[in-house]
Structures are given as C-alpha cells and as structure tokens.
Image (cartoon, rainbow, N blue to C red):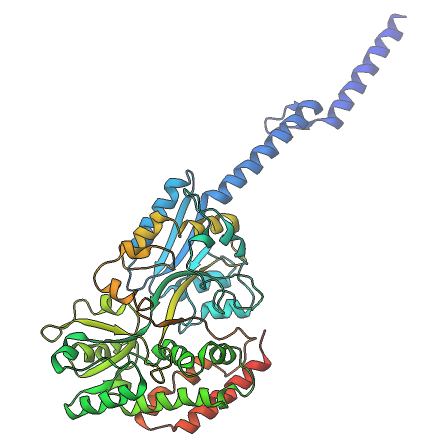
Length: 465
C-alpha cells in the first residue's frame, strides 16, 4: 500500500508539472508564470501598450509651413500656444522658404507631415499634384468643430464664401479639403502721393485707365508693370469677373466648351493685350524670382503707375528706397463702364492634411485652433490676416486701407481652375499667365496666345475630375 500510495503521488505531481508547462510560459528570468496570472498580466500589458501607443500618436504633431514675407516666428508662437492648451502634445515645426524641396523627399518615402500650410499656385505645384492624386484628407468636419478654448465653431467664425470655392473644394463635391488661411485682396498698387501731386484721379473704368496711360506716357511714366507673370493669376481671375461676372469666371475655371471664344472672354484678352502695350519696357527682363523686386521698385521710383500685387508687397518693399513723400495706394480693377462692377480678386493661402498623415484627428484639431482669437492675434501681428470676422481690430495703417476695398464697393472674386487628371505637357498657368512676357516683347501675338489657351482648356476638360 505504501508503494501504491507513493506511485500515485508521483503520478499526480507529474501531471501537475505537465499542466503547468502547457498552460504557463517562461519569463525572461526563466520562471514559470501560472496561466491565470499570465492572462491578467498579458491583458494589463496590452492595455498599457495600447495606451502608450495612443499617447505617442497624439503627443507629437508635425506641422510644415511655407515661410513667406510674414516670416517664421509666427508659426513658432502659434505652435507654442497650441501646446499650451494641449498638455502633453509636442509640435514639430518645419518652416522653410523652399518647403517643397524640404518635405517632398520624405513624402516620397512615405513619411508625411500631419499638417501642411502650402497653397496652390506655387511653381512646384506640390499641392496641385496631391489634389490630382486625391491624396488629401477630407477636412469638412473641421468646419463644425468648436475652436479650442472658445464656444464658437470654425464655420461660424469664417467670412462666408471662403469654404465654397474651387480651391477649398477642388472636386466640386461640396467637401472641403483645403482650409482657407491668410487672405489678401489683390488689385493695383500705386503711389497715392504722385496722383495727388499730378491731380490725377484713380481710374474706375478701363477707358479712364487708357486715358491716364496716355497722360503718364507724355510725362515719361509707364502706365503698368508687374513683378512676374505669375501675378496675372489674380489680375486675370478678377478681369474675367469684370468682363463677364461670376458666370464667365466659373465656366472658364471648369473648362466649359467654347467659353474662351465668347465676347466676354475676348474682352479680357483685349484688355491684357492693351496693358502689355502700356507696360514699362524693362519689365519682362526682370520678371523672374531673382529680379522681380526691380519691377516693384518702378512704382516706388515713379517710373510706372500701377502694378498687380497683394498686401504682402508693402512688407517686401519696406526697406526699399523711394521717392520723397511716397504713399501706398490700392484700388480694385477698373470696371467696363460706369454701370459695371469693379472686382478685387482675393488671394488666400491654404492649409491641408495629407491623407497619409499619422495623426489626422490631432491635425484637424490643430487646424481648428488656427482660427482661435489667440492664433489670429499672433498671425495678425505679422500682418497675416485670416478670413474671419472682426479682423480689422488687429489691423492698422496701410492694412486697414487694403482690407477696406470691399467696403468701398468692389466685389470679391475667389476661386481657381478645377482639378483634373494630370495631362502631360499642359499647364494652364504657364499658358494663360506666363505668355504675357511674350506679349510685351512682341514675341507672340494676341491670337497665338488665345489659341494656346483654347487648346489647353480643351485638353484639360477631357481630364476633368
């Protein structure tokens, strides 16, 4: 019986050890962990890991912003303000004048920023490329988000119209993919002191403009200059509204068949052709990224009367020499006649979230914060004005003049060409705006220019998204 009992005990012990080996696991120290504790520990470890991963995902936000005439400091200050209202969140900033060159290589490798402030219309066309590739995140829900620290939504704070354009809603589906940021009324800048000295009135119609051009020419002053042909985007967009209203503009922006041969569109071509004839002769030679300031200097030296530009020009030329008594003036584009409307195209920059962003929810939160009173004040201190209500309280001096253009009767024009599938060898901006240099020098005729625009429009219409 003693032997039988001993054998039975040994068998029970072996069975217990076997079960322990099957249901437990060996820790790093080589100890066996019981199944019940293991399950509990694994669950706790998984929860901790998930929590840590969540914290890590939402604790770091990469924001890439183009550095313009407004400078880089404002982005540093806004990032710090966002971190202050979001404890534990760290904003990694990438701010550079050549932002595309900095972020494109990493994006191609699959490493995307969470938020990007880079508008359309740049030579590298990075934003347009991502639009065509449908690589931006739909941020429509940001408009209904309550701004952090405030009791108002983003949409209630924005000036109407800025989130219903072809720029912010590039696919025409009612969804917003780009958030409107700093806006600038674009029009014609001039030396107000010169007009007062000469007793000249600022033209409100194009006939008055041509009459003034002849007067100025008699005194050795050109009527017109431009920094680069890229500035004809705002001018031509506004001009289409002048000659045919929003209906013409919207049809042109969507490549409507036959739109460029209409009488209204032809009037716009005629006006630009005539402006080319009144343009200061040295303008095309300096109309590039290296020498464009020389063209802007023509206004400060009273060698030309008007140039198309945006409100940032005063900052760019702040330290430039000028004739005694110089005073910035600003006007919308002249109307066709006394019974027609003047227009000022509103250029605005955009912020967006890549579809491949690592932290899309936090990115949306950051964009909503950009419209807070705190962020708006920081931006405005650098003369970067957002399309939100009551911004005039942050403005002074020349900026109050510029941003009052719509209060003086001019209508706002907004929008851009509709997104299309990429078409090899076709760039509407180069065709429609870039050709102006050749018009001024006489290397191309008006009819050649119009024909190339029609051809480009037809090819882009076929590729329309």
